Length: 293
Image (cartoon, rainbow, N blue to C red; front, side):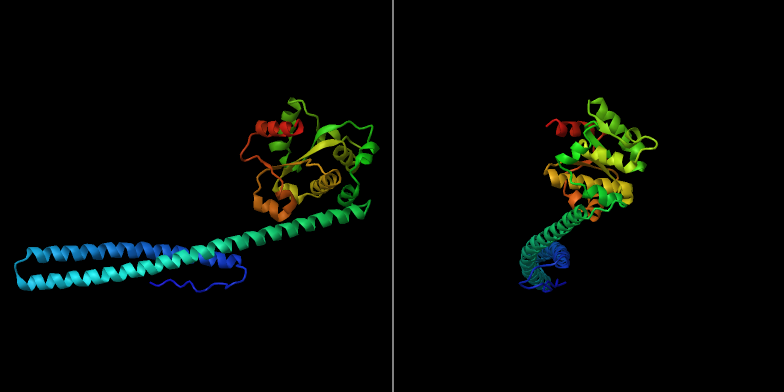
């Protein structure tokens, strides 16, 4: 079986489909090399057995027959050896093309991610320039999170952590994390404690974000489905841009990197803790170390 490998993109930039095709062809060539190597060994053995039989025989006819059989097997082995050499050259060529294609694909992925991240920055900048009181998400993001913002809430206490999470994640991770952080001496803004009956939810959240040193964000499928949590994330990113500080501390909870990347490339680029890999105690300790750094 001769493996075709001529379907290449030429001197241009390789695409992901080119990369996949090279890998598939390389895999087929690997299989062919293995089969051909086995064939060479079998033909060599057949030739050796035939020559040994010819040497043992005293019958002239048998000697001629076994010698001819050995010669044929040697010829077939030599042909298989040549085929293997050709396949090995094809494999080397494919490996070179695969390596180049991988570089091209990685560059394109990086460029696409940068483009997506730039779009997020532009969206946040747009939100910051268009204050709309009726829309909480835009209002929070639009507020200039500078020292003057904190001054406007001077009567409010300062928190080490603003804990942003979906209500569906409250029992499984948010509340246990809040309790563990407080046990380690950190002050935590937590909605069910800080927002009282009759208070404006929007205003209390604004105060919490403005007066927190860091935002711990529990990223989950439910988080991305909620209006309030996405608005909190927008506000935290706005504060991050205004202050220039890395104040967002993400925790991935029942979510994959691809899911985070699809929702927010900018958020996916921040080193995160992962509830699937760490206990609540371990995550709390990691947060404590960042805050006290």
